[in-house]
Length: 211
Image (cartoon, rainbow, N blue to C red):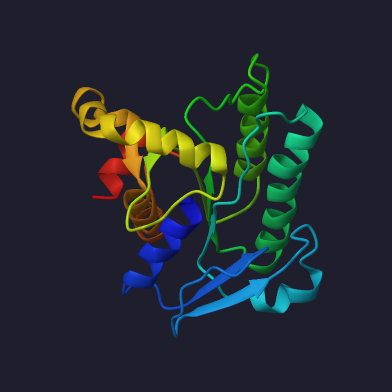
């Protein structure tokens, strides 16, 4: 869902000259500035490293829900995959900015009780140790999908349908608990172009950067 929103904003922004989408399935939109690589196994990018060079940023939006998963399985997809991709990219693009979609409540200490928060914290810390030009950990809370975008996860789609009628009230009483796919995408582009004072970007900062 986040990836769809980020791709939309990149396609619309004139500062973005070229986009390479790497994923397990086609991204969908057609554009002269969009190229796609469909890769069933994202752990192995060795065959396409030449196509990954020359980019200013990676917007890493891949993720799964931890519901029903063991810590080992969740860590494999969340930590192992992200770090493997990031290592390939920093080797080929040392001047790249890496933007990672984490989540509100991520545990930077890596020792908290929440499994998903620990693993996300481990992933963030590993990325921040890599020699990228810049690395930013986006920690959104609730993300409202806009422009016909929807989650591929059925449970999330049901959840959004239930929450949708209360979004105006939530925005009024707690504006910094909610952002949109549009603002997330715009904020990612902005931190790539201008940087940010902190490597951890919460919902309040996403909304400010993505206006």
